[in-house]
Image (cartoon, rainbow, N blue to C red; front, side, top):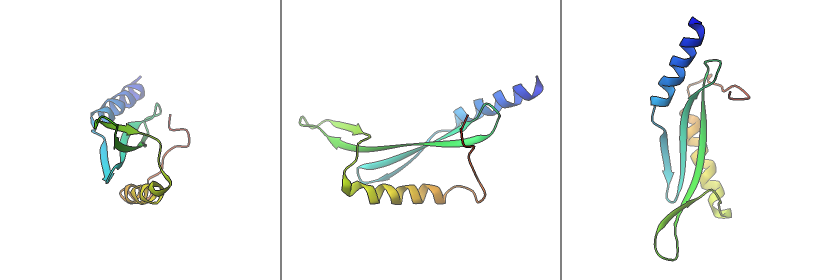
Length: 94
């Protein structure tokens, strides 16, 4: 029971950590901090591109153009470089 409480405490702490946002022009990556049911920390990522619609309103999409791909790769490289050396995620992340 004590172990379960420790895991739940870690999961609660992870939800208090605000996500990190990284941007390159209209492209952005959000890094979310999580804790698995087994109590191991892991991260997940969302990728978006911002654009204006015909009325001039800002929108977001998860669809990218060919010219976005290298910039997304560089954003990924940057975010990856911020991970502590030796850090690894579980394969299933649960």
